Length: 169
Image (cartoon, rainbow, N blue to C red; front, top):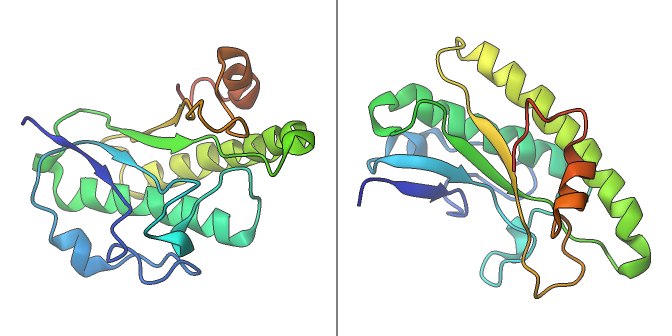
């Protein structure tokens, strides 16, 4: 293989699911070539405490966004030779609504978090010296869950409107 998409779902990367503190030792142990990064997801049967729903605007979700992007920049900075692309992508899912009646509100909450992603990513890029940028992306969500957001191009456009230069599909 040429490289892997590094899923940040290994619980050893972060100290706990409430603080999302980066484990520096794990950053130092990265050895494989990396093409992209992938955030935690809405559902995880093994790591239920580490669920990450972009339509949740809690402080915990904001810490998760910041620290997941931060660990990617730390890896990019510590192991630049292992990152196989000039500007690697960071994959987020758009999240899931609580129920069908919550869908529009969930889209609005996700949009707020996408704005936070754009701001945070810029801050981290500046903090780490502007050498290489990580490009946040929103991945289309699984169609088997009707409550998943970002399943259509129209929904995706609504989510990132105004942030098209900072967040990609």
